[in-house]
Length: 146
Image (tube, rainbow, N blue to C red; front, side, top):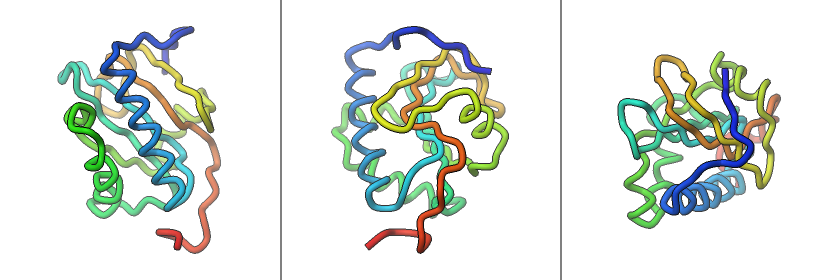
């Protein structure tokens, strides 16, 4: 499913976005708990813009989950924030998430570059996976940590 490159090919703008999104991921993880999947994917239909694909057992479905992530993305510098086309929350047990986490394992400080692939119905030109882990534990209690 995922084609890889030995070394991620990035532009300076993409490197800044990856660094900024790593901080977003760490801040959200600190507050809510770990992600099963956290990655940036550039769709063929929107070059230069990225879908932020996220999955976590604690992440509420629908708008509530999107809003949690959007609140953190909104704090990014404008140059990085405008590169995010949409936030795509997926259930940890969904086929796309299971396929990625079975093939790629990144828990901390890694970046896995993908080549052309598809996630659901979206054709992806390239992607950068910052977190991919099977069996992410559900924090207790569910939701925001105090």
